[in-house]
Length: 302
Image (cartoon, rainbow, N blue to C red):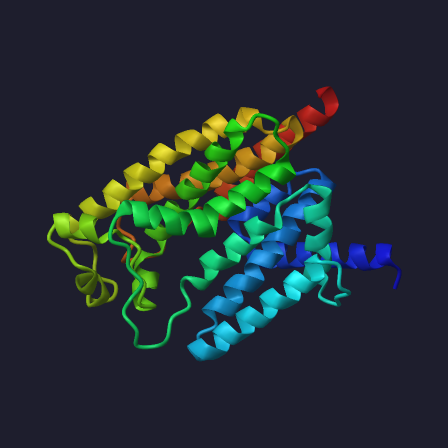
C-alpha cells in the first residue's frame, strides 16, 4: 500500500467511525469541505478511542489505565514520525500537520478523558464549585473547540476564547442531558455548592429512585446550570463570523443542534430523569439542510 492509499484508507476509516458514532457532530461534519471534513473526522475518531478506553466498564480500573497509557504512548511515537499501522493515528498525524494543530491540545483532551477513570467503589466524581466544573469542561470539550477552529480556519485571536466558551456551552448541555445516567455511573457533575444552596447533596442524587421526576429543588439547580449554558451559547454566536466562510455553515449546524437540545431540556422544565432528552432526527436534518444550502451559497458566490 502506498503512502497516499494508506492515508486515503485512514481517512475513510475515520469517516466511518464518525458516521457510526458521532450523532450530533456528524450532521455538522457533512457541511464541511472534504479536506476539513476529513480532518474533523480524524480528530473525532481519536477522541472516540480515548473515550472508549476510559469508559470500558467491562475492564477493571487498572487495566483501563494501562490500556490508555499504552495507547497514548503509541500515539506519541506515531506523532514523532514512527511507523504505525493504526489508521486513526495515520489520519490524525496528517490532520495535525495540515492544519497546524498543536499536539499539546490532544494531550489535554486525553487528560480530560482520564479524569473519569477511577477504581470501582471509590468516591464519586464531584466538583465543589462551578469554577472546578469549568476546568473539567475545558479539558473534555473546550480543547476540542480549540482543535476544531484550527481546522475551520480563523485569523482573529479572539476566536480562541470564544471557541473555549462554546465548548463549555456544549459540555454543560451534555451534563444536563446525562444527569441520571452519570449518577448511575457514580459521577455527579452538578457543583456541590449549587446543590447545597438548595438543600441537596451528591448522595441525594446517587440514591434517588430511578425514573422519578425531579423535585422542585432539583429543577432549580438544573435550571441554574442551563442558564449558565445559555450564557455561553452567546459566545458560539460571536464565534461564527470569525471562522473562515466555508466552515461557518458546519459550525452553525453544530451550534444549532446543541442549542436545540438545551432548549428542549428547558422546555421540559429540566426533567432529565424520566426520559433522556434528544433532538429528533427530523429536526437535525432540517438544520442540516439549511447548513448545506449555506455551504452551497458560499461555494457559488464566495
